[in-house]
Image 1: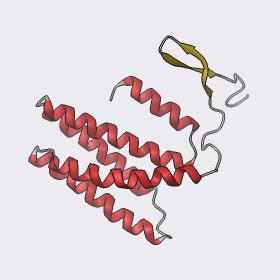
Image 2: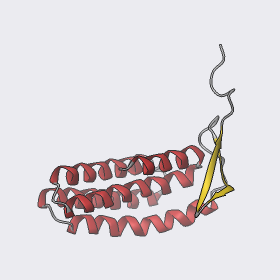
Image 3: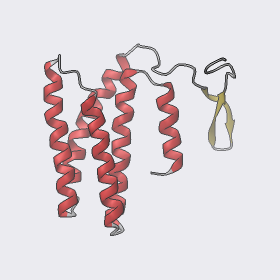
Length: 157
């Protein structure tokens, strides 16, 4: 994954609430899936398997976030297991079929979680993080983001 994409995910994670966190996890999984597709096009089997394993690890994180007090969590768990198995099949067959199956399932779930995240009014999960302001200044053909630090963050001795 490119450093700029990692920085974007880090910034988003530092500002997100619970619902947005799940959406970001899906975005990370899709980024790894795209990386695997590119590696497959370039016949780079090592990068291909590494990207798929990272996508599977992201799905593991989604599975760990499930609350099994609710019936829907059991159904989501089954879908996540199916997607992980499809990705594993893609590794040992060295074909994109399994990736496309997993991506199809995850995209349907993603749209549902995006809608659910819009209704989440909880506060950010992280405290004492940098505030990011977008749109305050504009560059030529770009939108600049500014981070402002509160130097009183952290522990005092």
